[in-house]
Length: 383
Image 1: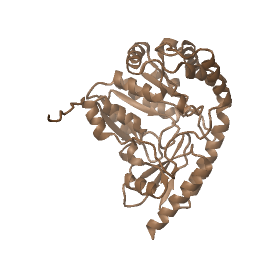
Image 2: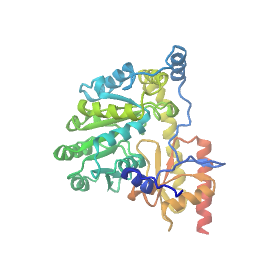
Image 3: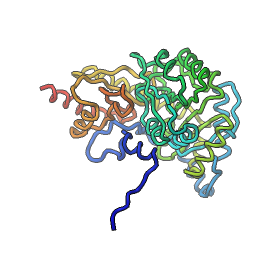
Image 4: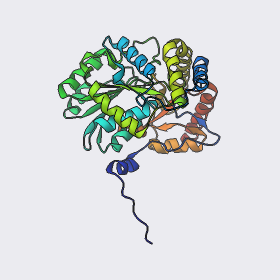
């Protein structure tokens, strides 16, 4: 019998063609400088809470919208940050930030809609837009890595949604209040939905002030706020994140999440309650270590031929600029063959071409090995 051709949805076809994200983790004896995976173990109080939950019977299906106590805690934290009242009914507990992003975009963005992404921008969002059969409109940041408000003023006309990642992934910018407020006025004028990813908001360096999108009044009725415990508390494998949205949006976003994902792990959510309750004291040692690693990477890059890096203000990554006549996928592939894994800048948008992304979450010993191999390859390339 002849083989049947499977007909895919338009979004699936576009995702299969346009998705630039790596499908599998790197294997073999390589230095892994590519993924934002904390090398720290989950803090012991969180682990202990998870064990207690398992032994206490939290092994069954839970509330499809998330543990009510965890939702109330997330709503209270958002209310404290914004000086506005958020209710538990506005919160969805998700399978990490990834499922929150996917269901938010799938619910609120229609086929053919235009979604503005700051360029470069974390590649998950571009993939989510493709899967929704919508159009990603990349708007480059300015030369300092901050918002180009003039370009955004034009690009947001008629746009359905805007994604703001703060601190920015991959460039590490921490946006100033005044630029966020100016952007918010443009969005208010255009009625643009704002999806704010602040999953690295605890990793702000050099004692800078962080301005959450939750505190921008003009976004109050247009904001979908995405948060995760993965990076903040070194809980990547626990898969707990959450989303907060206006009530009428939250109803439909929750509906899609429970249909496609179901209930998030019950015991992991109990551990998340402990994480959010104990808060920043658990995070502070990791933040100090990451700032030290950031400096190690940037200072070492400054000694290498043909590459440079701006010092990130926050987040998990250093974006490295190079001046070689090879595209970023080619450079990343060559470095992989040389024993070090980095992410090609083009994965994150057109403005990422000519760059590589290095994770500061990598252990110092592995960072040193990887940076040595990058320098060796650059030296050999230049000979």
